[in-house]
Amino acid sequence: MKHAKSIVADIKSGLIKPIYFLSGEEPYFIDQIADYIEDHVLDEADKGFNQVVLYGRDVTVEDIIGNAKRYPMMAERQVVIVKEAQELSRTIDKLAAYVENPQPSTVLVICYKYKKLDKRKALGKALKKNGVHYESKKLYDNQVSDWLRRVLIDEGYHIQPKAAQILVDYLGTSLGKIKNELQKLMIVLPKGSEITPEAIEENIGISKDFNSFELRKAIAERDVVKAQRIAQYFIQNPKEHPIVLTMASLYGFFSNLIMYHGLPKKDKDTVSKTLGINPYFVGEYVTAARHYPMKKVSQAITLLRQADVQSKGVGASAHASQDILKEVLVKIMS
Image (cartoon, rainbow, N blue to C red):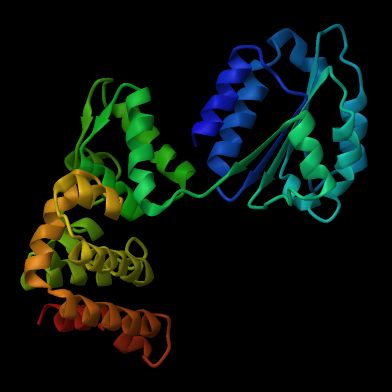
């Protein structure tokens, strides 16, 4: 993530490489770099003749090389951007010959989403010598909230830890999807605002009371009534709260609780760093540990694994699947 920012910073300062090969599982950072190059490397007056966008499904590697070898027209450089280049995965290694000797007046950008490039092959070695090879990695669940917070700070906003967790629990780890929802909030909220669960509920429609965060909290506090009320809401709204994602969230919570039990030191900083959570949520694990000793946590994880298999249609009828979440909560909290 820092690397993506440093690439953009280098381009801003005029340190522009002839080739940017942007690969990896997280498309957000690939788009961030490619969009900046598309918008800022050439002046508007030069873009008409000297900037071309190609698509991997419509061209060959030879077409890309042909475009890259052209000379700019009445300008210092040209920009060639290849989007969806993963469509050329079978032939992309043919680009190695060009990368070995790139046209210095061309900025070639290859957007190779959801794929990895073998750095040991000729293309990988040539990129290391003559260009930039950026691998955009998926963020772990516990990294997304921190990324979200930094994005908002850059835009002049703040967000409460609970609000950030609600967004991540609901939207998952797709950074592009989260950024789209943040932009909705930034349209209606004045700069300098603190984003709260109430603001998210009002403007995005994610309930501040019925979400995975509140379910975990209810379980931690062993509040059976609240947990079952949230479970019933999830059952009635399966598109917004798929049971598979709910099981994954609960599994992650109890996995962290096992780690918490095993810590020799349980101060806030140690717990936060080891579990990869915001210090704001440490109290939740302190409470949960009182209600769920190590043996009980191990049993909960076994129950969640069984429920997860059932939720995917193994050993459970369609009717019974509606009650899987409620049943596993009863067993865990009994």
